[in-house]
Image (cartoon, rainbow, N blue to C red; front, side, top):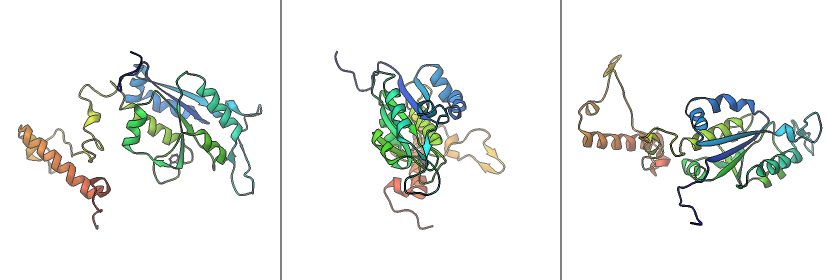
Length: 243
Ligand code: ADE
C-alpha cells in the first residue's frame, strides 16, 4: 500500500537536539527507561553542538544586543546553519521545536501529538535570549511551565522523556502509560499502595485488600475524580477549591 496506517511507522522516531551542552544529555539518555528505549532502538536521539556551527574558529555563537542592555544574545547564523544542516541529515522532515518560556505550555495532548511524528528537532535556547529571527526556524515553540530556566536543555529533556514513554514497547506489556495521570479520562492518578499493610500507623485502605475487583475499580475512579477536583480543578472542568 502506498500509505501508512495511523499507528504504523517504518522507522523509530528520530529526535535531533541542537544544544550548546550536548554532554548535559548523556546521563539522562543513558539511564533507566530512556536508556533502555534507546538501546532497544525504539527511538533515536542525535545530539548536535550549536558551537560547531559558529562562524569563527573560536566558536562564537552570541553577541551583544542591538539597542544595548545586559547579557548576550544567541546569533542567527549559527542557529540557522545548525537547523538547516541537521534537517538534511535524514530524509524525513523534522518538526522544529524551539524551547522557550514564551512557547505554548506543554500538555499531555501535545506530547501525544509529538510521539506520533516521524521526526522532531528540539532547539535549546540559551543565555539571556536569542535573536528574534531564530523564531522563524520553528514550527512550534514550547514551554514546560511558567518559570525561567537558564536554558532550554532541561525542557528538551522533559519533552524527550514524556514523548519516549508513549512510544510502542517502551513501557511494560501492561502499558502503565494508559492508566496514569492525565490519561485516566484526563484525571490525576488514584492513590497507590504496596506492602506493608500498615506503616507507622498509616493503614492501606481496606477496599484494596478485599480482592473485589469491581469495588476496587470504583474506589479508584472515585479517588481519581476527588483528587483531581481538589488539586487540579482546572482539569476537572470546575473552579478551583477556595482554600
Ligand atoms: N527555557 C527557559 N525556560 C524555559 C521553559 N520554562 N520552558 C522551555 N524552555 C525554557
